[in-house]
Amino acid sequence: MAIDWQTQRALLIDCPVGKEEVVEDAVESRGIALDTAIISHWDADHYGGIIQIVDTLAVRSLRFNYDTFFDGSNGTRALAVHRRLADDRYKHLHMGNAEEGAVGKIGNLSYTIAAPSRQHLHKALVHRDRNLASSVVFLEAHGSRIVVAGDADGRVWKALVDNGVNLDSDILRWPHHGALTHTNQGLDSAALLQYVSPSHVVVSVGSHNRYRHPQKGFIDTIRASQSHVMCTEVTPLCHKFLGREVKQCAGTVSVQLCYGGGIVVTPSTSDHEATVTGWDHARCLLSN
Image (cartoon, rainbow, N blue to C red; front, side, top):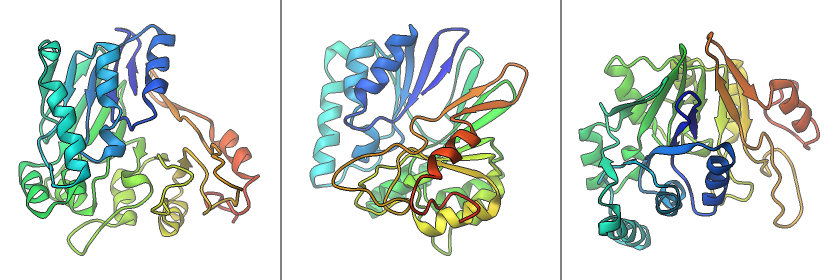
């Protein structure tokens, strides 16, 4: 969630089921209003909690694409969300697209949606490939920049580079929870890091995700680039833990874009390193 403190309004990009109360508590405890929500694409771990947030927090604007409604359980769940949004109680909700060229501004905070293109949306539908339809959102304020990458794969990033889009950003919220699907038609992790050149890479990942994210090779690539990587939760890649216990690593990562320029990241690099020093084999430590 990105907050413009001057206007006391915020922007939310994605929310999975189970995290609605976290967003609601963050909004209510700070006395702010959630102005805009963006659904990057129709994977349940990205859109699942959005409808409750729209219900609870009187969101003014909702951006999404009609991209990849497939047969099966995910398509059924997504269609249920759209049926609810068709109700008259949402008639005052402004609904717009979340594709290439969409822009907005909330006080000093501006956002630009650089992907997906209309061509990628079409291919995503034809090939049943939701990651190809994922939005890439740039947030800018006070001369600093964050890119939130959804699940955008290497083909999306390659198209942005080919189209001359400047990817340079201070913070990269890494795509696909520490994985980057790429082919010989797309960018790999090393190339993406070279184009973005972030000081920090943030990985939103669950301790017990069944895909074994983040990928080991991805962590090694970031270490070689000298960017500081911060995962929200620790996984068996870095620490062996018992049962179904969930342990925070960096936890909730907060980034402040300062009025005079520059950024402040919480937890700090030193605090994060102090935490991961206790893991069995923390991959993000350069000394490992």
